[in-house]
Amino acid sequence: MTRAWNVAGYTPVIVAMLAAVVVILLVARVSVARGGARLALKATMWTMLAATAGVILVATIGFSVGDAEAGSRVNIHPLVEIRRGLRSSASDATMANLYGNIAMFVPIGVLLVWLWTSPLIARVIMATIAGAGLSLIIELTQLTLSRVADIDDVILNGSGALLGAVAAAVVVVLLRVVKWVRRWWRGRGATPA
Image (cartoon, rainbow, N blue to C red; front, side, top):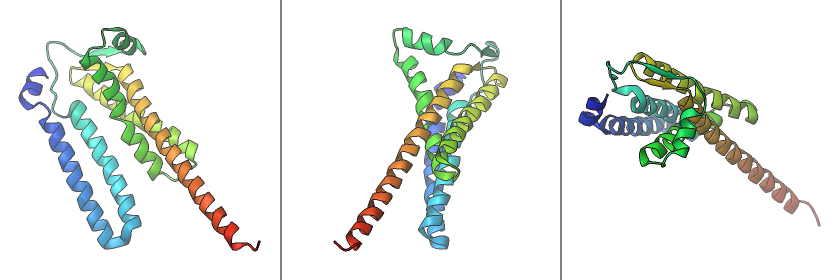
């Protein structure tokens, strides 16, 4: 893994992100031409979700082979690594790991809340479960690649999906309130004094 990272560095992640942007733009353009803005928005959000998941997969397991001598390890004790990271001297790598694991899954929560049409609280719960599920799949895959599988990563990734879902739900509620106020204001102006 270290040798692969030293050779490739951030290149695979950057290439994946650029490819995702190109695909998103193409889908948006084709959708506008074929079905208008509403279809373009929906298709673009689904494409953004797929691209986000792809970039996450490339960033976490995409080109790593693992260290055959180290073997697979599993941390099934919740919050051990998180506490250790927060209590340590807070090195840049530790903080990047903690906050990066959260930030990486925020877009998953946001996009799923906007895409699904069930009641809002159900969307938040389902987006959180989907984010944690994707994280669990990644951790189990890392275990098969002679890397560390850590329950704390699942907790952090699920927290990121929850954070994104809650942020998106707040935006949805605010948009509904604005819409209601506009309707109320228009109705008020139409009534005789």
